[in-house]
Image (cartoon, rainbow, N blue to C red; front, side, top):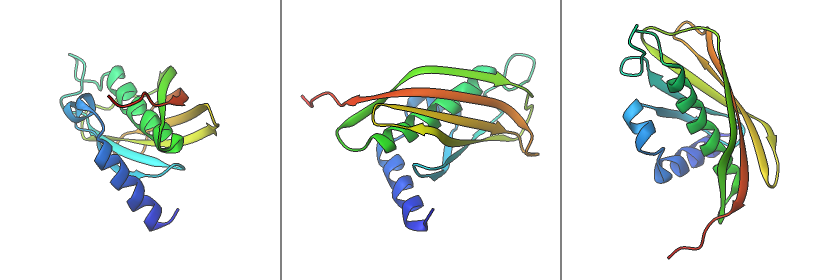
Amino acid sequence: MTETATTAGLDWAAARGMGALADKMGIEILEFTVERSVATMPVEGNTQPVGLMHGGAYVVLGESLGSMSANLHAGPGRLAVGLDINATHTRSATSGIVTGVCTPVHLGRTVTVHEIVVSDDQGRRCSTIRITNVIKDAPAAG
């Protein structure tokens, strides 16, 4: 991955935005290309009543990364939308930030599959998310 590719991907993501939910949850993109996307999210504000990171928060991070990555792959005039998502939570973060690393499993013309590994500050895997997106023509403007 080149610095130019990373910069272009970050510029694309910044122009498009991650959406209101991702903004509310404090998701920040660090790296963004078709081959690899990385974002962080604070644990604080995204917990269950008992102080553990909410499983749904892991999924929001994963879906945000996977869907955005699929849309970058889809290209102009095309739109990727979620078809299926699943998650396995193996550890609960209680403080700090979590980091999601999204990599493609399959990048097709009409279907993408991405795996997102979410780890805590100590690098321990907390959740593994897999998202499948279907790519279709974007609706006409107007």
